[in-house]
Length: 594
Image (cartoon, rainbow, N blue to C red):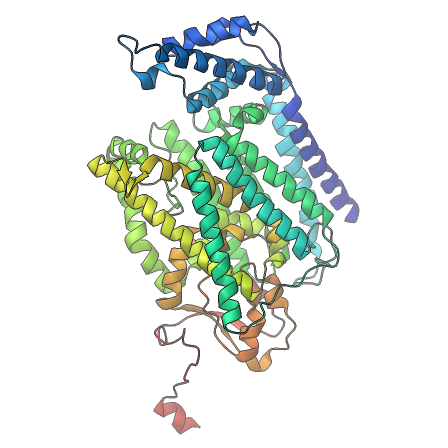
């Protein structure tokens, strides 16, 4: 069995190496006929600049092509700006005549797609098999033998494995703060706006001051989570690779054209259209959730709740997040994920989306009404009966990836009091940001006002999408799995999780109950809690776990050797269960029995 697993591991590594090497395969060559822009002024200026650089007909690697073409577009943009500075041109509008930065990015992306050539473009299915195919086969070869192991959670050396060991506090802090400031700097250069990076730094400073002042004001020394003696070097490599992938996916899709072309046949089969970076991501996301979901079945095969929950996240990812939206596109309907909910789906109320839904007939209107009903009625009602687990642990795509691919890293979540304080300020701050931004978007939609309280609506949208929608949820939220645990986004950033958590804490029947008399303080529950909750401290005191961040995954219960923890729904004490000191009420019938 070990030999089969080693072969599977080698196949996965080989698939990753081929996948990475594909970035440097092939070339790009542009001819004048490939440049067919709707804007004639742009086309004329670009052709003149390109001819001056002997660009047409030259074979270049994708990296060299992008660099040279960007310089040509910039040169064309400068020429158009100079022309306009000599005086307005009759019959032209400035905003259409000039070549803007966002148009430069758009032209690069469209050109890299239309001019790419090489082994990948000629044999996409071959490379699909060498990457996705080998990775799936290797993953299954590694996972399936695990079904023959004894059931139950075992001490499997997770804190000794260089992949799942975690980082020392100083190394982890270096990655966290380095990543934070790198994203801010990139945001400044990308959006050409210094205001929002400075606001973000100011907010981060206020939160840090509140956390430290609050700790000291109570005379508490903030506890830190246990740190490994040695940093996990494989974890750093894995995290760096994931961070790099998300940077390319979100902010430099031109460089991954080979990956996109590789999955193009699958896209055309499902939706009838060509692939994009988002189709690539959706396919990869779904495959990973499926394969790593099978691993979850092997690990928690002794627990029915975990098996059903895992099957649920696999189903919702494959059906609702991937297949159904693609089929809708083939039927000339809007791409729509029926399980995605505002404010996680932060662009739901954007003008382009509202116009698209309302112009798509009855089904589009139904999609709009469905989304609004989920926000106003669905979330409070479902959370009252089932807690936030109904979404975060059974339906959500972010949670699905965290529970499957991220499961090997769940023990890395910081259990310290300081981390919990940061968590509460940051996640509710993101929720407030999402609400304010959405209010501004709706006011702009109904009144046409582009500025509110001195802030431009488009700038607010751009910064939220860049910093929260891409940087936080993607680069940090998933890239930091091997560095800080699998629920960094869900715990610190997801505005929907914050909304669900507020309802769960104060108006939900769900909670995890404890029987402190049977607790042996083994610590399994706290170790495996992905949300940074020190479950053992609750169990030792016999307190119910009602923290709003709890996603009800039930793993703490699954790994408890004494059955101390139970997932329960009960409405009798909804109004008092969050009190620090709770009173036990005994009925007259129970007194009689005693």
